[in-house]
Length: 582
DNA sequence: TTAGGGTTAG
Image 1 (tube, rainbow, N blue to C red):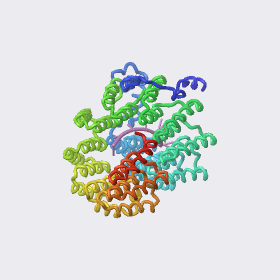
Image 2 (cartoon, rainbow, N blue to C red; image 1 turned 45 degrees about the vertical axis):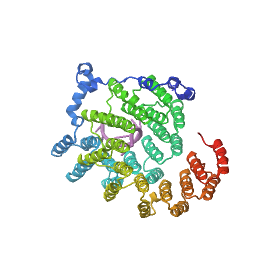
Image 3 (cartoon, rainbow, N blue to C red; image 1 turned 90 degrees about the horizontal axis):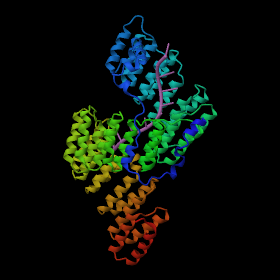
Image 4 (spheres, rainbow, N blue to C red; image 1 turned 180 degrees about the vertical axis):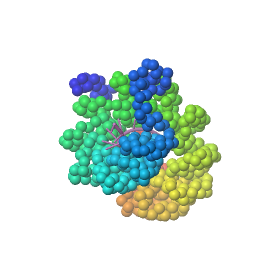
């Protein structure tokens, strides 16, 4: 422990004092430590002599363990057939191994089918078998089916254990059923159905973090201590990651230090990756670079995810030319860029409108045998739409469907935004109807915002309003941004009465108008020459503590100017000087 | 001698 503390003396304790004014992106890239793991013997067969011991072991293993050889599901299915025809039937352990292999390839429904066949043939199943199959149900968002399997097992004397319950907890969390997960977790403890272990605490912590809570998970670490269950690197990494995602990077670093210095738990590449992402996304490049150096000091090799985080963050910062060389650095260090890495880079070029470059990366990726998915296509689509190249976008959109790939809600939203932008409302409405008729994809809050804004910008406010009313009292109708769009749209086309009704309506619903809400309505009043009303609303903003921004001042100033209220303008300019950043 | 938990893209 003492050694460990010494080892990490140079860690983030001095983070805030760490400053590097000469920082550059190329330095960041060159600071990436080389791979410390010797991968060669596992990646090629040219080193068989140098590793004779482990080789002979694995060979002898293979004789008895055909499961390790399986790379494709078809192989597994064939082996399953052979196993079921063997007399006497192989043990449950052997079938479990096979099921594990299939499950690891993410062919969950296949595993479930095999389980059904096993049950039909009378292959012995145990609690391991049911746990594997429950996991498959959970991964397919059918956790309720997972509970049914517990009941099935129970009838056959298979008592669920901590692994089984943990799988179910994880399933509930995957389906955002966090309250049910919490209830189950408490029930397990209260009724002594099983004593939670570190894995189960970690699952629960993940769920709570996902639910937007970081304080309870931290408190849970204390509970673990009390109940004699030691938190591990996963416990801390989960919370560190959640804090980073909530832009609380300093709290994450504090926890990181606590983990190392007080608990003596060593961080691994996952912990570092979370911190890297948190720091990069908040533009703290110096600190990110320090993390890379610290990884090097601790001999922890960055993995594909580390590099991808860097590529993505640089691209989002508009530094795509700094991101591209990272692909080469990866190659030098034996790390193969994957679909996510390439997609991040493609997205970076698209964001800059460099579509030819984006296309070149896309083609390069394809030539390496990496198959793009809907996220990759969406990046390209968005790029074309932003450049108003709708025909290219449309072409790509059709290509997605032709390739048997399923467009998702984002694909449709991007296309809708593009079509509205170039004023092709008829096509947009057709696409929107097509989307609504789709039984698998339904428009989300973002889609509705795009459609409402599109209609308003194309002088179709009545259609926007009727769509809004049709949405009824659902969550989307409780979105302040939607109200802002409509208030702006209505007042722009002279329907100030409707704008006022909408303004009151959102307050009745308990929504909190923001700067934008007030600004668009002030703009509406000014447009109609109702300067007194505009000033009153401006006053009201101040009263409820909603701070006007530069746009608000500009809108009001223009209104006053148009109506010759020069005294008020002078007063406002003085006020602005003291309040608004220029 | 088999099962369960944490990190990356729109």
